[in-house]
Image (tube, rainbow, N blue to C red; front, side, top):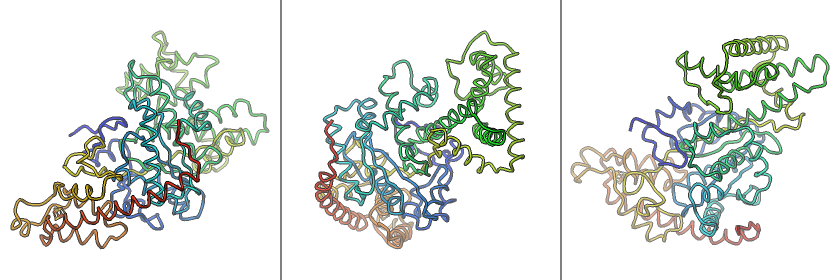
Length: 494
Ligand code: SF4
C-alpha cells in the first residue's frame, strides 16, 4: 500500500516503515543504538526500529540521572505475544534505572471501543498479571488505571484547555459523530504521557507501536504549549528587574523559536500577543488566507479563529509582530550568549518558578508489529493469528506448528535456495521472543534457514516446544503475581 496512515484506533499494519521516517519524521533507532549502555535485544535486532528524541533518555541512563518510562494498555482482549514487546520495553527501562509506569486505558476502552466495565475489569487484571510475571517491579514502579487517578484527570482537564476540536479533526479525523467521551479519552491519554513528569520534569520514553505516533506528537506539542502559556503569562506579569526581564525574554523567545516550524501555532501566539489591537479572529483568518495564497495548507486551522472579515492590515501587523519577536529573540540570545538548550533550560526553570510543570517533551520508541501466525497482521480478534499469554501451552504449541512459514514448496528447493526468514512468522517468533537475550541463537536460526540447512518441519517443532515452555513458565509466574497484585491492594473494581 502506498498510503501510510497512522491511526491509533484503526488497522495496526504499517506496510512500509521507511515512509515513517520520510513522512512523519520518526528517526531511525540505529542512529542512537551506540548511545545506550546495554541495549535490549529488541533494539539490537531492529525490532525497535524508530524513535522520537530518545537521546535525552539515553543520556540520563548513561549518567545515572532520573528518567521515566510509561506505556498503557487498552484492555480490549487477552494480552498476547505482541503486547509482550511493550511489557519487555517497560521492564527493561525500569531495570536500567527508570521510573516505570504501566497504565490501564480503561476510559479509552470504554469510550473508543465500547467495552463494558465488567469486560474491562477482567482484561485489565490479565494485563497487569502478565506485566508483573514478566518482571515488572510493582513495588518500585507505578500501576494505575485512568478512571481511578484523580491527579491524572486534573492534568487532562488542564491539557484540554490547550487543545481544541479542530485539532482533533486534523489529527484523528474526528467529526460531528465522534462522541465526547472519546475526545475526553484523548486528553486523558495526553495526560498519561506527561504524568511521570507531574512532580518533576524528567526525560520520559513512551514505547508504542507506530500507529500510536499521533498521540506522541500531540503530547509533545501540548507539553510545549503548556510551557508556552505559563512563560507567556509570567512574562506579562513578571515583576522583576531589567536583567531578569531580559533573561525571561530570551527564554520566551527561545520557546517561540521552538514552534517556528508550525506557522499556525506561531501565528496564534503572535495573535495573543497582539490581542490588544487585533482580535485573534482577524489574525487567524488572514493568516489562513495568506498561507493558502502562498500554496501552503495551514496545518491546524482552528475554527474559533476563522473569521471571514479579516483585513490585510491585520496580516501585515501579524507579520511585523512575528518579525519583532524573532529579532528580540536573536538579540537576547546574543546578549546573554545563550545556546538554544540553555535558553530552553532557563525557560523551564522560569516556568517551574511560576508554578508551571516545565515538561520535557516526551520521547518515544517504536517497535515493528509482529506478523500474524496465519500471515497478514496479528490481530486480537483472530485467535489463530496470535498466541495469547493465557493460551494453554499445548494450544500455543499447536498454533506454532500450524503457522505459515517463509519456506519453499519442497525440501529440495529449500536446501537449494534457502528459506525466506525475513518473511517468516516463525522466524519472527525466534527473533522477538524465543531467543530471549541470546543473539547467537537467533542468528544461528537465521543463517541456517537462509543457507538451506534448516527445514521448516524441524524448525517449527523447535519453536513450538520453546513456545510451550515459555507459556508454562509465564503462567506459573502469573500465579505468583496474583498474590503480589493483591498485596499491592491494586483495586481493579470500577
Ligand atoms: Fe521459517 Fe524456520 Fe522455515 Fe526458515 S526454516 S522459513 S525460519 S520455519
